[in-house]
Length: 411
Picture (spheres, helix red, strand yellow):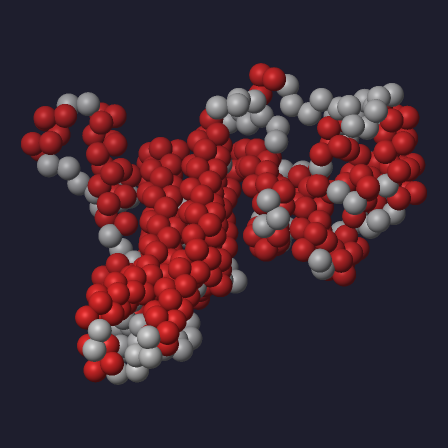
């Protein structure tokens, strides 16, 4: 990613990157623990069943015949019950943690909006007492106090109401038109059930979902849970929702820095591709290439198109990759861009000829790009591609310095 010079965009990037890393760490912790929890549940259940069978225990009376068996049975039964409880409670806790990180993001975005455009505080209903006013006697501290008060007010509302308030803060821009809106609504309501009522479905849960025209497949009194499939979807929803919200807000408030905002989004998408999170990369690329999303230049736009195509390609959908490439007009693009397109099309001859035409002085197609970019993943396996690289750059393909020592830390 090119260096960001606008300090406002720098702040936005830090907020978004911190959020993505936070929920990704929760997702990884969930993945590490979920199978263990399921294994422990199955193991404890099997051990109890084996004990009963081995000792010919079919009734309570059978158990009472041998006092030592009672103690062993109680211990095994307790282990089983706790392993079952852990397999239910810990996934819920991971899920609630993701929603909590989303709440933190909302607070940071609200603060970001007021810092960028302080005039919006005039339109808010935040107030401060005379006692506090005279006690503080510092305009900046008073401003921060009003912002914190406003954040607290918004965060006390439902997640759907929060979106509406954010929409007002960015001049009425709609923030709820996403393909997974109903899932987002249901997940935020499910979080409330886990926090307040052990996951037992309430009339409010059903009413809030239905208010947003979301289908509800459970009835009042049912108990909801979180399995690995549901959690993975929740991670996807909150990852995309957080990134899209920050992007929409930035594009409304910082429309004089769209090129750097594009750079932030493109970097997030590319990192998702590198981490094999193709569903996230595809969703964010669809957002980036939508008609409503404006770009500073065609070059910025084509980067999103190429990432959109390669996300589909690496996910196994070669047909969709080709469809995206064919739908975009590359006729005005230079060889620096066309070489990437040819790589996605598996057109080795055009890749090689483009590499020779580009030479070794391109700002875009550098040695590092050819060696590390995901878009050349398949090409790097081909002998002709590597030989052409060595011909152009006059150095072995596997002898390219990727990162300067000053850019890395082993801590």
